[in-house]
Image (cartoon, rainbow, N blue to C red; front, side, top):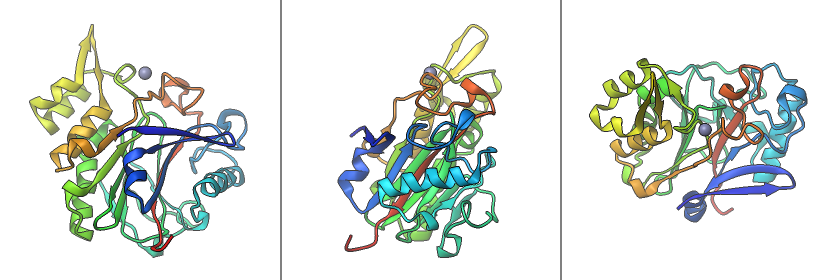
Amino acid sequence: MGITEHNQNGLVYLTADSFEAAGGVVHAFSTRKGGVSKGTFATLNLGIRRGDDPNLVRENYRILCGALGLPLERIVCSNQVHGNEVRTVTRKDAGKGLFYPVDYETDGLVTNQADLPLAVFSADCIPILLYDPVSQSIGAVHAGWRGTALKIAALAVEKMGLEYGAASENILAAVGPGLSQCCFESDGDVPDAMERAYGAPVRRYIAKKGRKWYLDLKGINAHCLESAGVPAGHISVSEDCTRCHPEKYWSHRATGKDRGSMAAVISLKRKGI
Ligand SMILES: [Zn+2]
C-alpha cells in the first residue's frame, strides 16, 4: 500500500494507506502548505525552535489539529539531538513543546495512550511513524543519517515490544518525505557508518559517483525496520524528495538553516470514536 496526499482547504499533508485501512489511529506527514507563518517560515512551519513567532506556530498546529481532529493542547513534541533515545510518553508529557517546556532530549517517542499525539520534526531527515493495531501502540521517529546509523527505527520497534507487548510482525510503518538518494550526497564517512551498523547488505542503498556517495536513507531505514522484524509488506515509503520539491517541503539542503520544519504526527483514537 502507498502514501496518499490530501488537500484540505489548502492544507496539504500525506498519510499511509495501511494506517488508514487498519483504523484506530490518526496520523499525518505535513508539508509547508496551509499555514499562516510569514517570510522565511511561509507558511506551515511546525518547528518550535526555529525563530518563528510562537503564536503563528501554535496557529499552524491549530490548523493541522483541526483538520485531523487532534487535541492541540495534548501534543507531545520531540527534542531532537540526532541520538538513539526513544522516550516512553505518558499523560504527564501532554502539551510539552507547545505549552510546557520539553524536559528531555529524544529523537523517538512511543506510547499506548489514546489522545496523546506524538510529533517529530524534519526538513530532509527521515520521519517514521509506527503503529501496531494489535497492542494499540504507536511510535514517531526522527532519523537523520546519524540516527539511521544508530538504528533508531529498530530501537523504537523494540521499545514498543518491551513496553506494550507489540509484536514486530504486526507493526505498520510509514517512512515519510525526506532526502531521497538523488539529493543525499555525502563524503565517505556516512557510507562507512552505515556499513559498520548494517554490514554489507546496506551497500545496495549506496551509490558512488565521482568523489561523492549518494545514500538512499529511506531505503536504509526500511531495511532497519525489516531487520527488527517488521514485514516488508507493512512498510510504506514516500517517494517525495524534500530537496527536489522546496516549494512543497522544508529542505535544509535547499535553503540552509533559515527555514521551517515539517512535523510527522500520530495519535491513537479513543475507543468508540
Ligand atoms: Zn532529490
